[in-house]
Length: 202
Ligand code: PCA
Image 1: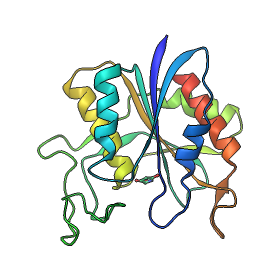
Image 2: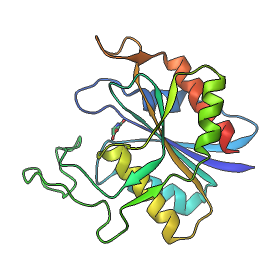
Image 3: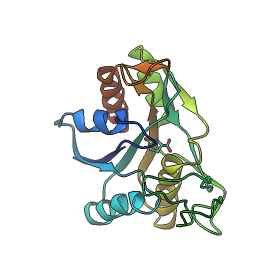
Image 4: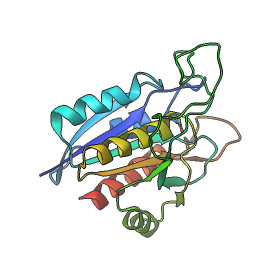
């Protein structure tokens, strides 16, 4: 049976909820694959090490990371991770350089290549989401915050270790009722979108 590591995030940036963590938590166990879940802190220093630990100990066949893209109306199937951390503070009040005062961009990994493509079957996933009539699209930038940092870090590790792993990132909209005046989707639809994505991985 295939082993899939699925991650979501805790709330950040003043939001009380993060639909990515809620949707991942709500995913049901299935008979077709073994699943481990992690709900990660939106922290430059603490998020990826949690993934690395499970990866090294459990050796998953696939890694699906999920985050919130506030303002997006559609489920976004991310295609690319880039080697750039923006000058954005995390929930610990720190920039990617570890400083709380010195705002500066930095690479995710010094000296590593500019970008990696996600290795999950993006086309199959998007087709399956569209088939289910879930508002969805490709995205060619996961931003420069911690979602991109995870995607890039995971793809770089896979490349370093020549691991044959499906790795990708899904960005979700705000959940219905979470915020006024922004595009949103029901949590139920988002859970379904993740189930469809997971089925496309196996
Ligand atoms: N979204 C942020 C980080 C955590 C999350 O859910 C991002 O897009 O980078």
